[in-house]
Image: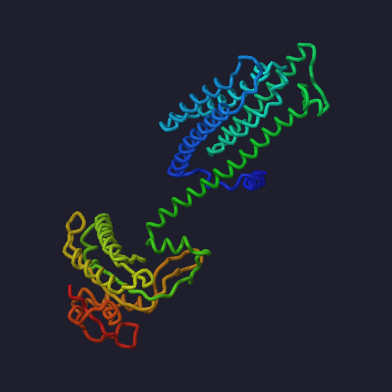
Length: 445
């Protein structure tokens, strides 16, 4: 029975985000609730100002009696609303005060409606015809601005109870006077002070029905909010594992990404690797090594971002940085500037607690690159791949045999507008996995 009930509950109220929400999710939702209370306060203030304005400009329709409770009720409600708004800004509206505000809202309204038969010198059933009852739905709807059904249910219950008491008072009072004034004639009900019990029950049922519908909508809304907050926080955390451009491509994808989805375009690829990293790894403990790498990666990322580069992959101590032609027409020049700044700014800088100096080797190539998702159905990475990417990786490795720190292809040197003085040719090399030789250049820094 538990499983069918759960499915029915999910169908009516929507699926839950989780059985137990993480603390940061609850904190985000709670902050939303506090903001909602401020909004409720301002809406209430607007409502009371509107009612007050309408009362001042509208012609007075009361009899000759001096009993006019509306200004006093509006003044009291204005004071209460301003106090409530002040407490909302202070964050001091706890469950007790929130529940009290619901009772005050409905209590003032019901007292005002009750007073109409005195103000207009009529029998008690007179106030049952008052259109002021419609304000009940405004007060119930106000509670829906907060994603907690308890206050909506409390408002609806208070309204239904209040109207029931007004109905009972009208009937009992007239019965004590010897004239119950109860009728089954709808015309008589509409044209006199008689009471049609069915009509009053309809009002109570309408109040309760609206309350239940709003409560269900609120539960669905809160569950949707919780799921949205969970997804948002998860996406924010995951965005730290991928480049902003990658995150943008994923979030703006018209359909879910699948393995093999990608975009082919011209780009310049920069591969970096730390010289002698294996030796360094043997000399320091893992915790120190991790801190050192994090500091180094952060420094390289700042340089890459300054020139419009995007780190799309971390492989051990190596980085794959792309410069997209769509975003940057001068992508090759930006990649070369990144390599130059890495060598100039980072190669002599100490990293980590031990002040280790890390020297970086770079390989650059320009050509058609595939930027997209690779992997399996349930496990994907978003990266750049293709023959031009592989060539850049091979050039980075060839720095060892050439005694250089930057090697680039002819395509990159030409696209960047470098002269042979700025990018001296190093001859033709045949890299592993390729049959045709590739002319390479180094970089004068």
